Length: 406
Image (cartoon, rainbow, N blue to C red):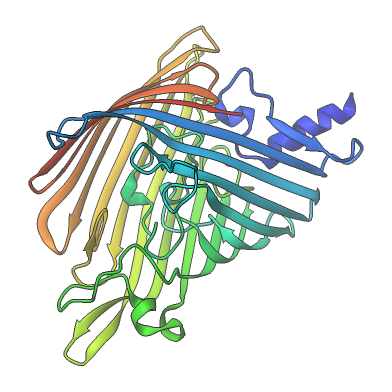
């Protein structure tokens, strides 16, 4: 019996996606293969999840359906070790599979299964872990390190994945990282290589930069970027064993976390000058606060998050959700009091505003939604209305998402 107790403790302390953090009365640590009954540190942990959506958009061309189905995510995550001294993490999956990018025989370039994460880490103690590979130890903010298993809102604030596709592969860089904690203080820092064929493949223009420094200047000047995220925990400490930050504990913990982070890419962008194409430094930084706590004794809970972020991608940079300027974003949700441990309801509200140097127009997002939890984050439905406005564009979307993870 003591072996099973030790195993449960090991799971709880090692993995941030544990039963405690997910608020589930049923989930007991998930599927874990133990290689040696007498040595619980030898294990392979497997997590699987899927998110399926039905979406309605009000403003589409006449020949386009206003409703559609979407496989938003389907993933497999593997965590393995044969000693407490070192760990390997692998993560595969796909995103955004729809009728528009499916393939008749499941091959091709569109929305197929690919490698999200693959890193090794050497655990030298609580104060220091070193690792490297294709990793998710990002800088800037909590939302740039957001787990997709336990978000409060339907999805992450898109602009907060601030380097996705510009310098990385789907919010992951190839590089080396260090992490650790000193009491209530936690840190993670990384040195990475930038992707050479990012989404922004525009030609540099006069007075407007593009994220093409590596392509135009070469790896000698623009290959490396640097990231860090630092947190201080006023109540309970959160797990930093994995980089994936929890979106809502549903009252399972009492946390108040203050954070700050940065991302720096010397010569990450380029611009056309009188002397030809020259580099522009990219520098992003943010300050954020996260609060999650139970309310009373009837299973109620409050979750709240706010972030201010300053973005410098280069002179007058503007590309999709990215732009030189500043951003404020926040969301809050309330788990409604109930005596039912299994079934929980959580209405929420989100709002964001982003300004850009390249235009006088601000981009605003407003989300109103609710989560219905049948077994914490392991089984939930989310209904959300979102309005996004930028200049003359005002897109309204209603989404219903079903999610299960094991």
